[in-house]
Amino acid sequence: MIDMRIVCLMLVPALVAFGCSRAEQRLPTRHVVKGSVTYNGQPLQGATVTFWPMPVDTHDWRAVRPIAIVDSDGTFAPNSYSERDGAVPGDYAVTLIYRASRASPDVFRGRYADPEKPLLTVIVGEGENILPPIKLEGPPLARMQAEPDSGN
Image 1: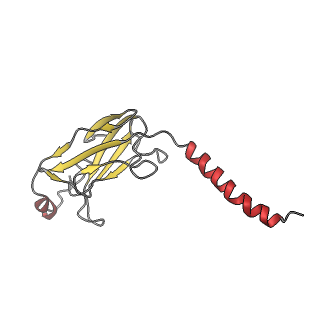
Image 2: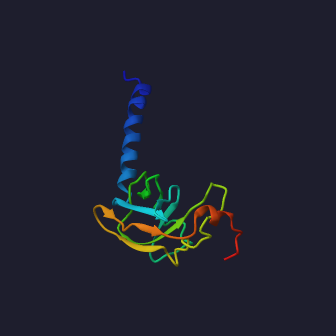
Image 3: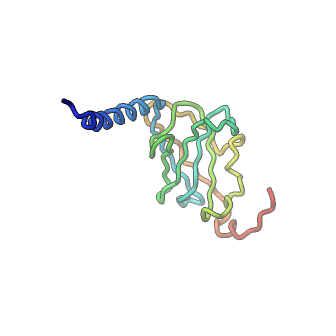
């Protein structure tokens, strides 16, 4: 006679694997996106780059907005569902924020953070997508952080 406990123990891993593989199949195909950000010629390490699907709907909580954190060399590659998996093909408004720490406000005071007035717009296509370098210029960051917010 077959012990049902053994049958159940043998079926559970198979069912879990089947369920996980089917969930992965439902995700849309993403394509690699790579870029870089500098400020006054220096890598903007730690900046957050967000890709907003166009047309932009900031209230659509279901929209996938690929996001990237800029590396120490200034490069970034956005995440949609897993690390550095890129983005679904389409048009995107690209925004950027930079904080001195997690608790501090955006050093640029929202200048590059509005998806309605993006830093740039890009088209993600099939295959590897290399974005043009984002080269920002302005006053030294230490000075910008020390200035009081004018409310703009």
